[in-house]
Image (cartoon, rainbow, N blue to C red; front, side, top):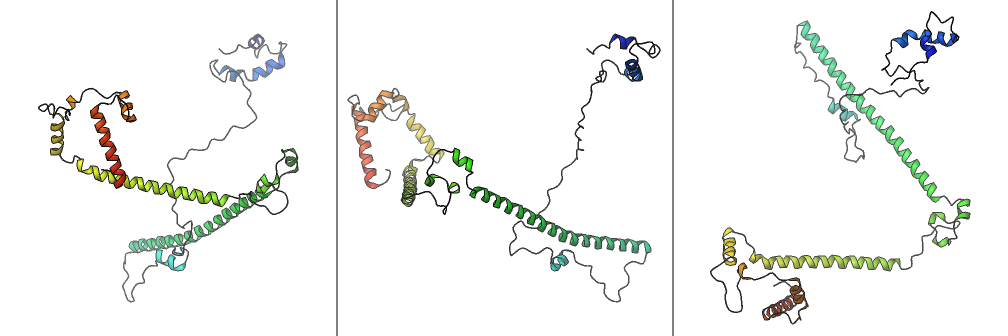
Length: 318
């Protein structure tokens, strides 16, 4: 809701301004009365808000489109095999001059209009050749200048950094810091004498140990990879590679005719394998010495031990 105007301002008009006790104020308001009368109350300009003295930011005009990526005419790191694109030979190769006409040849065009068009095209070609030559020379000069400025700036920054790194500690910092041995301070913080590295008496031995551990780790990984390849080779004869092999395995595993092969072995039928192995049975099987393990499980453990001994002796999976 807009604020209301004071009563004296509301009743004072141009006619009764001389009789009003607020004559200067009324006279001031009367000069802007037509402007205020033209502004409705719902307008944000109805209440006069003073503006700041700081100028508003200039909004740049938005440019439509995308500029193409400029080509790298000159390589960033020149090499001996690069061609000097400012040499006369290169400029003559990329901007060849028109071939001279043979002696005694008639003019190609006798029509004045056609001859004027031909001369105009020749002037355009000459302008293109001149612009390309001058452009290459100017771009090369600009690149040399910009590279020199960048190299000088980089060199100045490197020198400033080296100066700050090699600067000694300030006296106030040295007096306020806790007591530290000079041998334990960094190189840049030591005072007097030639900067020396921190003492490291057994550094070379630790480097040799780390190198030996790295070599051992690589050898262990190589041996593991060799074992994995041998295991893959030994198990390759049981891989199912055709539909006939898959059908044979399905018929053998899900065979309902042959329930039991003998009194001691239940066969490979999944429906005759019984209940699932519990966690307690798996733990008993891992201990390999529990009395709860049945005879068939003990026989399987003996076979597994024999197989493990044979693999250890032969150096490969079986």
